[in-house]
Length: 223
View 1 (cartoon, helix red, strand yellow):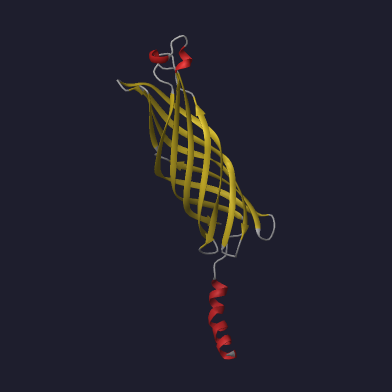
View 2: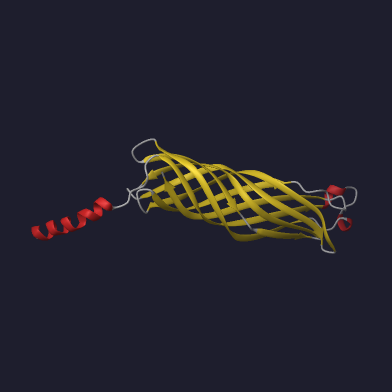
């Protein structure tokens, strides 16, 4: 039994020594793919065109549409341990996006196309093992999009290109593949992003709101 244990230890030693560990402090770059779900809310208020209400303005209501699309992102960041197994990092990123949603509220149509997102994240994490870390994140994200407004009986009449910043929060897991390369998966949420659209031809105001949920995966390369 002793010989078996000793032989096993000798065989396993090189693998233990060569086992990858999470990168230490310093600059890193990241890249990969993300799946972003865009939910658009359109609330049309017939009371906004007083004294014309009811049939003159169409029915009030709220409609919701949702779409998920794949995008590609890249980022650069800096990681710093604040204790032996605790770390913080800050990262700036840019992501190409393509989610599209269409809401139809009575006769009002709004087509929203997400073009890109960019911003900065602050991550707080803990090394669970030498190879695995869990982290939470909070940050600010700009969502760049186009909005085409029209009616069911006419082509688009108004176009809005806007950029709305929102609070992003989420978390993820990181796994070392080598001493400098790791893979990760994370989720990201940004809710209640309002934007203005022109009052429609009936004098009715429409409240537009966007929610985002993103699943992101990729690689981090440390220098």
